[in-house]
Image 1: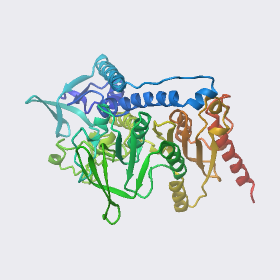
Image 2 (image 1 turned 60 degrees about the vertical axis):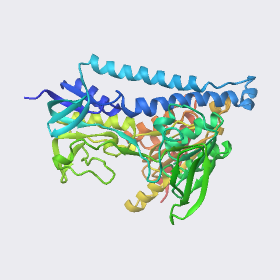
Image 3 (image 1 turned 90 degrees about the vertical axis):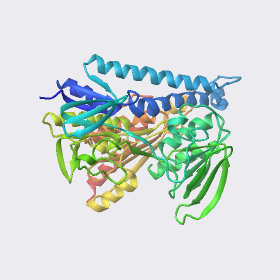
Image 4 (image 1 turned 30 degrees about the horizontal axis):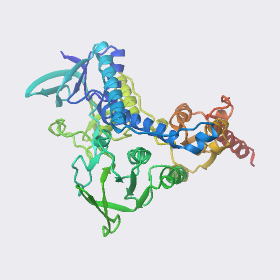
Length: 481
């Protein structure tokens, strides 16, 4: 009756993860992609940015003469090959994109090149070069990803005013660049550009820098990643108009009153103000499906697309297209769960247990709630919340490596020991956070985590110390009358 058991529109990390799980479950699967295989993460996001950040990190190490001298190392001269850095990033993209494509082909997944559009909940059209092919499937999964959001008043010329898509190509190094936004993307590019000797001004419309981070982490990150690198900052300022050219003209207004406050003339501007879902022209309106205000596809907790609040049993959506947690690994998790639900499961994704990271130097990572979020939840549900901190400057491995800047923060319930959130800024924070993510996923309380033996000397002892402090507090709380 159907050409396929499952047709996936979008071959990014989410679509790829869903396809792999579908094959494991015996589903005949096709995947539709109009652009490069691998989507944003592989081609214009996670992978090339991490390649540039890796180069920036090595450069910082070689330029840190004081730390190198303490280690008994002297480096006379360090040279940067901008084109070589960009080529390194592109080579990694090409390799991983090829590996992803071959993994699908090897498993028998049909790859359909073209623009995918839903005609009916079990019918998809694929258009390529004016030729339309219609295929049917028991289930259709939308995994179309996202694209950079450019606010009104900002003109992009892809040369002097650009988004992260263009910045990753590293065509030139602006002497002075304004970065609009202080989230993950803005912080990572500030790390890259300052390592390469560029002057950076960071502009944030909200009332504090790094507004999505835990306040303690944001304060330390501001000092280590921005102030110590002479990054100029503007907070509570809206880039209401940016005009490309030489110079680029940036008009800054008070974010509340919209009154013009300052005009900057810089060499370039990077717009890092977030992303919007790529959900236009998918045929959803023809099916009577109304998207959310910013274009996100409405779904239930099992990832069925909703029509008038009711789930469509054969139409599903995941990843950036639904906006629940716009991270590549979250999309992959959603894809696997959606496919399992197609064959009769009733699974959901525990977003509180999904970690996130900014790959700056040092790295920032977190899982679960920030302290303000936890306190708000505690007030609402009437339970106590506490937090403890431990520091890399007391960690033997960090001291030995000359990277002792940073802290780990553990947020928990002192009455039950429940782990509510963990935040880390320091060396290898993106790797360290996985232990905390596993603990939240398995609902392991802090007094049990404190009994786990950590290798000495390792960076993981930073978390071990925090868990032990939290455990002592839980014990005291239980013995109080």
